[in-house]
Amino acid sequence: MRSRLPALLAAALLAASAPLLLAQQRGEIDLSGIDPALVLASAEDVMMRAPDRDIDALYQAVRSASESETEARTLCALFDPDADRSLLGMQRAASALGPASQERFVGAVAAIAVNGTQGQRQPYDAAAAEQVLKQAGVTAMLLHDGFMTGMAATGSDPGSQAARCRSFRQLVDVLQDFTRDQRAAATRFLLLEGLTRYGSEL
Image (cartoon, rainbow, N blue to C red; front, side):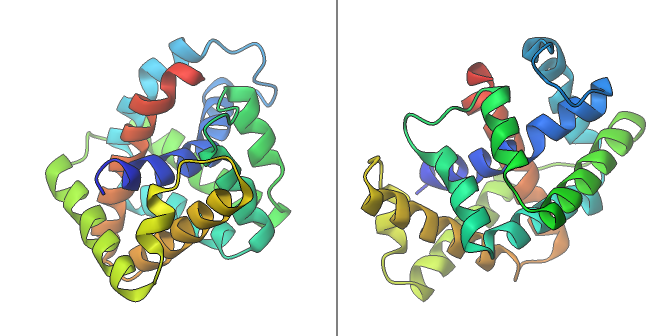
Protein backbone atom coordinates (compact mmCIF):
# COMPACT_ATOMS: atom_id res chain seq x y z
CA MET A 1 0.00 0.00 0.00
CA ARG A 2 2.95 2.32 0.52
CA SER A 3 3.74 2.70 -3.17
CA ARG A 4 0.23 3.38 -4.40
CA LEU A 5 -0.93 5.81 -1.72
CA PRO A 6 1.65 8.51 -2.50
CA ALA A 7 1.56 7.92 -6.25
CA LEU A 8 -2.15 8.60 -6.65
CA LEU A 9 -2.43 11.73 -4.57
CA ALA A 10 0.95 13.12 -5.48
CA ALA A 11 -0.02 13.21 -9.14
CA ALA A 12 -3.25 15.05 -8.37
CA LEU A 13 -1.55 17.55 -6.08
CA LEU A 14 1.19 18.24 -8.59
CA ALA A 15 -1.35 18.56 -11.38
CA ALA A 16 -3.17 21.28 -9.54
CA SER A 17 -0.28 23.00 -7.82
CA ALA A 18 2.83 22.77 -9.97
CA PRO A 19 1.67 25.00 -12.85
CA LEU A 20 0.18 27.54 -10.47
CA LEU A 21 3.15 27.50 -8.11
CA LEU A 22 5.59 28.02 -10.95
CA ALA A 23 3.49 30.80 -12.41
CA GLN A 24 3.28 32.50 -9.01
CA GLN A 25 7.04 32.30 -8.56
CA ARG A 26 7.81 33.74 -11.99
CA GLY A 27 4.83 36.04 -12.37
CA GLU A 28 3.89 34.21 -15.57
CA ILE A 29 0.86 32.35 -16.84
CA ASP A 30 2.43 30.79 -19.93
CA LEU A 31 4.80 28.10 -18.65
CA SER A 32 6.36 27.21 -22.00
CA GLY A 33 9.44 29.36 -21.37
CA ILE A 34 10.10 28.20 -17.82
CA ASP A 35 13.03 25.91 -17.04
CA PRO A 36 11.47 23.31 -14.68
CA ALA A 37 14.82 22.34 -13.15
CA LEU A 38 15.54 25.88 -11.98
CA VAL A 39 12.16 26.41 -10.34
CA LEU A 40 11.81 22.92 -8.91
CA ALA A 41 15.14 23.42 -7.17
CA SER A 42 13.41 25.93 -4.89
CA ALA A 43 9.99 24.24 -4.78
CA GLU A 44 10.93 21.78 -2.04
CA ASP A 45 12.18 24.57 0.21
CA VAL A 46 8.99 26.56 -0.41
CA MET A 47 6.84 23.56 0.52
CA MET A 48 8.83 22.99 3.70
CA ARG A 49 8.44 26.61 4.81
CA ALA A 50 4.73 27.01 4.03
CA PRO A 51 2.51 26.98 7.17
CA ASP A 52 0.17 24.06 7.81
CA ARG A 53 -2.88 26.22 7.12
CA ASP A 54 -1.70 26.93 3.58
CA ILE A 55 -0.78 23.32 2.86
CA ASP A 56 -4.17 22.21 4.17
CA ALA A 57 -5.89 24.79 1.96
CA LEU A 58 -4.34 23.03 -1.04
CA TYR A 59 -5.67 19.69 0.21
CA GLN A 60 -9.12 21.27 0.61
CA ALA A 61 -8.94 22.51 -2.98
CA VAL A 62 -8.19 18.97 -4.17
CA ARG A 63 -10.99 17.58 -2.02
CA SER A 64 -13.50 20.05 -3.43
CA ALA A 65 -12.45 19.23 -6.99
CA SER A 66 -12.67 15.50 -6.28
CA GLU A 67 -16.33 15.88 -5.30
CA SER A 68 -17.15 16.74 -8.92
CA GLU A 69 -17.34 13.81 -11.33
CA THR A 70 -15.98 15.91 -14.19
CA GLU A 71 -13.15 17.52 -12.25
CA ALA A 72 -12.20 14.25 -10.58
CA ARG A 73 -11.81 12.66 -14.01
CA THR A 74 -9.53 15.53 -15.02
CA LEU A 75 -7.26 14.92 -12.03
CA CYS A 76 -7.49 11.15 -12.34
CA ALA A 77 -6.37 11.26 -15.97
CA LEU A 78 -2.88 12.02 -14.64
CA PHE A 79 -2.79 8.60 -12.98
CA ASP A 80 -2.73 6.85 -16.37
CA PRO A 81 0.60 5.16 -17.18
CA ASP A 82 1.01 7.19 -20.38
CA ALA A 83 -0.30 10.50 -18.97
CA ASP A 84 1.42 13.74 -19.93
CA ARG A 85 2.83 14.98 -16.63
CA SER A 86 5.00 17.67 -18.18
CA LEU A 87 4.44 21.24 -17.02
CA LEU A 88 2.32 21.96 -20.07
CA GLY A 89 0.34 18.75 -19.56
CA MET A 90 -0.34 19.68 -15.96
CA GLN A 91 -1.18 23.21 -17.02
CA ARG A 92 -3.82 21.83 -19.40
CA ALA A 93 -5.24 19.68 -16.59
CA ALA A 94 -5.39 22.61 -14.17
CA SER A 95 -7.00 24.80 -16.83
CA ALA A 96 -9.70 22.19 -17.40
CA LEU A 97 -10.99 22.57 -13.83
CA GLY A 98 -14.03 24.74 -13.20
CA PRO A 99 -13.69 28.43 -12.26
CA ALA A 100 -14.44 27.84 -8.57
CA SER A 101 -11.82 25.11 -8.31
CA GLN A 102 -9.26 27.19 -10.16
CA GLU A 103 -9.90 30.05 -7.74
CA ARG A 104 -9.41 27.76 -4.74
CA PHE A 105 -6.17 26.38 -6.17
CA VAL A 106 -4.84 29.81 -7.08
CA GLY A 107 -5.56 31.11 -3.57
CA ALA A 108 -3.96 28.11 -1.89
CA VAL A 109 -0.90 28.02 -4.11
CA ALA A 110 -0.41 31.79 -3.90
CA ALA A 111 -0.36 31.52 -0.11
CA ILE A 112 2.13 28.65 -0.28
CA ALA A 113 4.34 30.60 -2.69
CA VAL A 114 4.34 33.78 -0.60
CA ASN A 115 4.49 32.33 2.90
CA GLY A 116 6.76 29.50 1.81
CA THR A 117 9.26 32.05 0.58
CA GLN A 118 9.08 34.33 3.60
CA GLY A 119 8.40 31.90 6.44
CA GLN A 120 10.57 29.74 8.64
CA ARG A 121 11.09 26.07 7.91
CA GLN A 122 8.21 24.11 9.45
CA PRO A 123 8.58 21.11 11.78
CA TYR A 124 8.12 17.98 9.70
CA ASP A 125 8.27 14.26 10.50
CA ALA A 126 8.15 12.27 7.27
CA ALA A 127 7.55 8.97 9.08
CA ALA A 128 4.60 10.39 11.01
CA ALA A 129 3.18 11.91 7.83
CA GLU A 130 3.42 8.60 6.02
CA GLN A 131 1.71 6.90 8.95
CA VAL A 132 -1.26 9.25 8.52
CA LEU A 133 -1.54 8.11 4.91
CA LYS A 134 -1.35 4.47 5.93
CA GLN A 135 -4.10 5.01 8.51
CA ALA A 136 -6.23 6.75 5.90
CA GLY A 137 -5.68 3.87 3.51
CA VAL A 138 -6.72 1.30 6.10
CA THR A 139 -9.83 3.31 6.94
CA ALA A 140 -10.77 3.63 3.28
CA MET A 141 -10.23 -0.10 2.79
CA LEU A 142 -12.58 -0.89 5.68
CA LEU A 143 -15.24 1.55 4.48
CA HIS A 144 -15.19 0.84 0.75
CA ASP A 145 -15.29 -2.48 -1.06
CA GLY A 146 -12.87 -2.48 -3.96
CA PHE A 147 -10.66 0.26 -2.57
CA MET A 148 -7.49 -1.82 -2.73
CA THR A 149 -8.39 -3.05 -6.20
CA GLY A 150 -8.46 0.52 -7.41
CA MET A 151 -5.23 1.38 -5.64
CA ALA A 152 -3.50 -1.53 -7.36
CA ALA A 153 -4.95 -0.89 -10.83
CA THR A 154 -2.24 -0.05 -13.36
CA GLY A 155 -3.98 -0.42 -16.73
CA SER A 156 -5.11 2.23 -19.20
CA ASP A 157 -8.45 0.54 -19.89
CA PRO A 158 -11.68 2.27 -18.78
CA GLY A 159 -12.22 -0.20 -15.94
CA SER A 160 -8.80 0.44 -14.43
CA GLN A 161 -9.18 4.19 -14.87
CA ALA A 162 -12.55 4.19 -13.12
CA ALA A 163 -11.27 2.00 -10.27
CA ARG A 164 -8.22 4.22 -9.68
CA CYS A 165 -10.31 7.36 -9.68
CA ARG A 166 -12.87 5.90 -7.31
CA SER A 167 -10.16 4.91 -4.83
CA PHE A 168 -8.53 8.33 -5.14
CA ARG A 169 -11.79 10.06 -4.27
CA GLN A 170 -12.39 7.71 -1.35
CA LEU A 171 -8.93 8.33 0.06
CA VAL A 172 -9.24 12.10 -0.24
CA ASP A 173 -12.59 11.96 1.51
CA VAL A 174 -11.22 9.87 4.39
CA LEU A 175 -8.35 12.31 4.98
CA GLN A 176 -10.88 15.03 5.77
CA ASP A 177 -11.63 13.30 9.08
CA PHE A 178 -8.06 13.74 10.31
CA THR A 179 -6.89 16.86 12.14
CA ARG A 180 -5.58 19.82 10.18
CA ASP A 181 -2.04 19.16 11.38
CA GLN A 182 -2.27 15.55 10.21
CA ARG A 183 -3.76 16.52 6.84
CA ALA A 184 -1.06 19.13 6.34
CA ALA A 185 1.68 16.65 7.20
CA ALA A 186 0.24 14.08 4.79
CA THR A 187 -0.20 16.68 2.05
CA ARG A 188 3.34 17.98 2.52
CA PHE A 189 4.60 14.39 2.29
CA LEU A 190 2.68 13.87 -0.94
CA LEU A 191 3.95 17.08 -2.49
CA LEU A 192 7.54 16.13 -1.73
CA GLU A 193 6.87 12.59 -2.94
CA GLY A 194 5.40 14.03 -6.11
CA LEU A 195 8.51 16.08 -6.79
CA THR A 196 10.64 12.98 -6.31
CA ARG A 197 8.47 10.70 -8.44
CA TYR A 198 7.39 13.03 -11.20
CA GLY A 199 9.84 15.92 -11.16
CA SER A 200 11.84 14.37 -14.00
CA GLU A 201 8.70 14.32 -16.16
CA LEU A 202 8.15 18.06 -15.85
